[in-house]
Image (cartoon, rainbow, N blue to C red; front, side, top):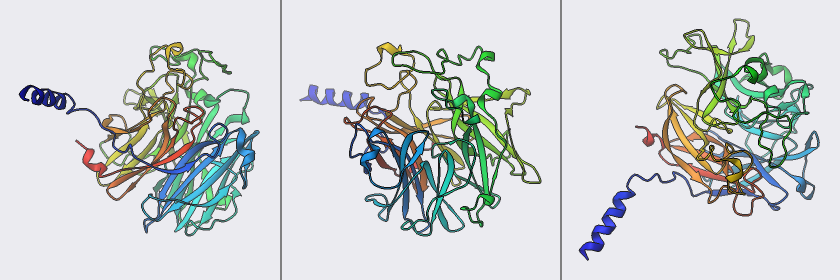
Length: 432
């Protein structure tokens, strides 16, 4: 008996520091009726002042013709957005609307709820309660827009968010991230955001303007040989670029990039390099006339900086700022085997080695550069069972997470069959 007790104590001791997921259990918001042909994408989440939750997703894939409701077409890619609400903290969800655009995010302005996304043009619709919605309207009549549902920022009586224009509508590239121009959009919170004239736009800046890969060295970017097309089994990646942009403002006066006038907005973007662990950044500066100019950031030496440390920066991530802790919180994909030769990865892994998609992680930081690991949020049971491309909001003492997910029936890690809702309870207690 004594020997058995000692064995148990040693086993418990050996596991006492093991990281356990913060929110592995989940509620399924939406499940694809056809996992092999209708795929679940782009979750966004919003909490109203009374506690009601609004969620948005979109669907795509060759099976879209089997679904009812309005649909949009982006260069032949058929999509449908959906809105849901919950009045019990996310335990149950009710479908309230379909809309013909994708990559949407819900947000509040002037007491109204808006859902903004794109289908070539930027599109938006409004609700006063989350139950009934206006017809979608177009905010643009030119450009070729893109952008996953990242964060929404409020400052100076305005709402700020980023959409990305693909320069010249260039669809000749497999993945045109080098030609994507993050554009900061601004509108007064007391204006009608369905009107195009309510919005102002920053100047465009494509990754190719500031990080031409032929001039990069000693940084391992790009990690793989660049190529404009991609075929199964071919080890190359799209030209170096950026996409899926969050808005960050530095309020700490001791921060090197703090603007005491509150007119500088930093763009924190997924860095498409073939590697892992870095984000790409730029900044937008408002002048006294409200003109917003996008430009690279600089460091004290005078050198330009585009790449910054960011755990999971190789995949779409989400940043929120918490006024109570004065910390930035980062929800991102955890990479564990990006240095494994592509041909030796499990067959169910998607694409290049840096494209691991089944582990969501949480970090916090005082400055968006030095990140502290807070925990593993959730993980799929296999590389195909994804937990990725997530959005989050702060709700009282908790973080609410909406994940683009999949189970064993999913077509691939990229093309999942679920949207899942997770709650990280008392997240501020993770700070150390």
